[in-house]
Image 1 (cartoon, rainbow, N blue to C red):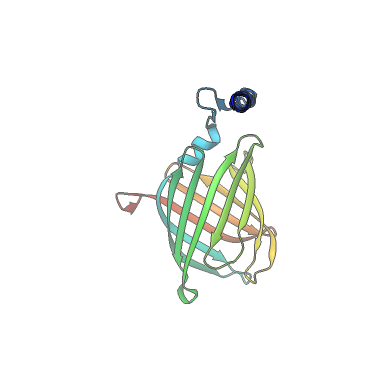
Image 2 (cartoon, helix red, strand yellow; image 1 turned 90 degrees about the vertical axis):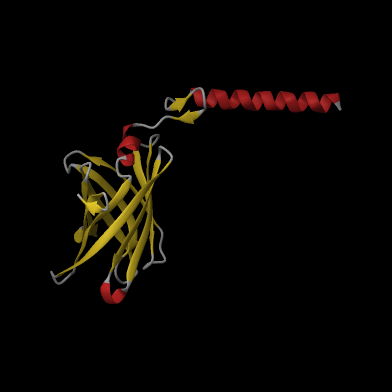
Length: 189
């Protein structure tokens, strides 16, 4: 019995030592807690927390546009992630509701995101980076087009503290623009 206790204690100490060694090798780890430290990109993501309202413009293949009012709520999920809830009335198509999770993978140096919505059975997995020449974050993924076919898509997001524009492209062709402003005291600023 004492041998089993000693063996268990030894294994526990070895495991604790291994965890401390692996944390010491990561430059973003906070040594006292073994938790990573948020980097600049995480802090930038946190600036999007709040309530937003604005317009979504769908750019149709025939050159026409369909404009809808939209609202969005963004909340923090700790210091590393933000969670987005977006909705808009699409007239005869009904209420569109979307849910996104956005973060930054410091080890890979990439923004990462997921998106699911009420009008698709596909979960979009996105990855991107800040593009200084374009002045914003460019994300890329394969997602459904209007017919449900998976195609290459991308977006460019430019942001200030109180407004942002996100332009979407399907196979390089502009498909949608989201223009939002931060709500202040219940109204858009």
